Length: 142
Image (cartoon, rainbow, N blue to C red):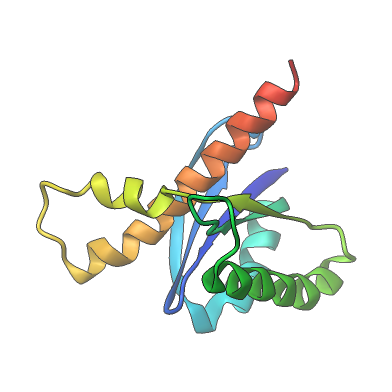
């Protein structure tokens, strides 16, 4: 089963998906925030998703900001809407996403940023979030 990561934004939701073994991941799709629920229903079915990791924007000092609270509430709302459709079998995890967006943007510093590049950067940020989660999970097994 695969793991899906989400980078929830105000306008766009970036996603990344793991391989079947949960070792690596790649950016997947960026969708309009209004399409999040239908996107999740589709991708969970098509990709056999067992876990959804959502980036939690914690401050550098480790505290929750207003944005953190907003994401926590959005994640809970998505879980409450999506999980019953899948017999409550999907595991939901909030994961520290500090610097994921900055890392994604830094990959394109030499390119001229188009609107499409900016939109795609949300999925790249989701991939950084997911890879951090996968790496942590791998090290916990030792």
